[in-house]
Amino acid sequence: MGRPKNIENMSTDERIEYYNKKREQDACERLEAFNTLSDDQRQAVKDLYDKLDSVLDTVLYPENGGIKYVSAFDLQELADANDTLRFNFNLKGNG
Image (cartoon, rainbow, N blue to C red; front, side, top):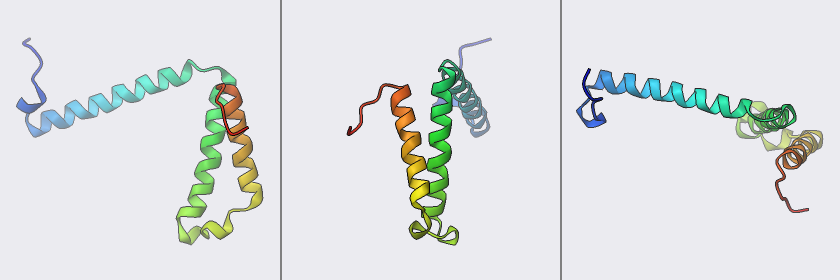
């Protein structure tokens, strides 16, 4: 086997395969890093993601109601998830 080709010297199909493998490797590395977090840290990240995703889904898509349909309860849950994340990762906030 020879040396790996430079991106510039690859055919389109080779570049597609290269980048597919690179994306897969990067995803595996991110999952590995995520799994090194404590259970509480992983849960804090998941909870914040879920709450933020839900609020943004409502806000950004008019068919879901838009900003007027985000309740105070939704915002409080998002704030609580943010506080939990801040605590678990020793992040400083405004308080």
